[in-house]
Length: 413
Ligand code: ARG
Image 1 (cartoon, protein in one colour):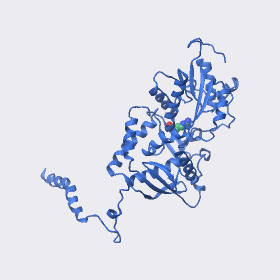
Image 2: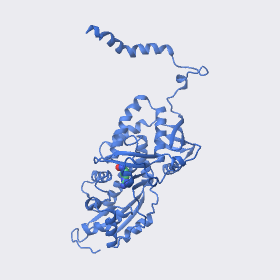
Image 3: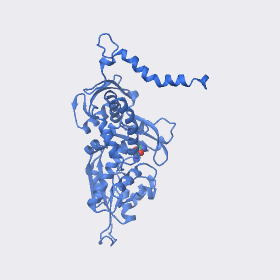
Image 4: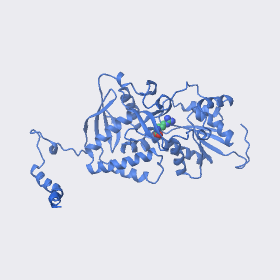
């Protein structure tokens, strides 16, 4: 395509495009050149999505007209800097969605801004539509890092149907990946997969089998349970069945083991930030299992006051991740609080995976607050609890209510 502008010292302005290699962003390369007269730098990241063939994606971006294309493996950073804080916060939006899509967006926004600075680009573009949360996460996340960058969102401006995009691609010789069109919109990474649109829009209908791509149907799952031991250090999972491994491997392994037992399927009508209720499904076997286990080890190692207070903070953090406020002023202080609570969250949790359910069946911890001597009702274990002290405690504990009952007797009023 001809360079035409003389602005920017005779060079065209640049746009850094969040490129997935799919139909939307392949078409976007050409659309951006045509409508904004810009050079396109196509950036993809590996956050553990299946079929992430970086070489192929980069080559296709070049063939479709990008002046630079890159594919970065950011999985380690994704797990350590984004997913683990979410685990420590037991992050489940509306108590059910482990935020798998949402948590990848800030890292993508960070990568895009970094490349925009490297390239001296004026624009960042993404393929989000005007109805979802992801546009908010990108736009707000990018602007919070550099307010001078301008955002372009072709799908928000153009609002073309899938067929119109295919026609546009044919008309302009754009190479799109030969992939049979999915009736659903999907987003996938290590922490989970999201699925929306198509048959899911009827909230009364059970999700058709084609929705599920990463988990075995619980009805078809093995008839005997699978037990897994998850070891935690300072709130982070570090071992599976006693074997130490890095975060990527641990999540991948657990996705497989729990997914094979039908664990992690979620069907939810969710409140989007843009005010729409939307029916979506998720498959997050590792996320659901890890958070269940993490809550169990917290229950054993944290004081009640900490657990109670943390619950409110967790919900705030979860909302911030969902609402695209990762780069806002509250995230770091909130993370500092949550990190401080995780100092003694160490130990091993044994979970039982069986036909779609994950159940905690055992836990042990070197920093446990569970004291058998205090807890026991057995005659065989030495009871260290002072039963007589209970009477004095209850007298004082119940005193305000006793006093009120005497003072406020109805016949006195
Ligand atoms: N509703 C989820 C969220 O906002 C998932 C969005 C998935 N995006 C997609 N293109 N399917 O985090």
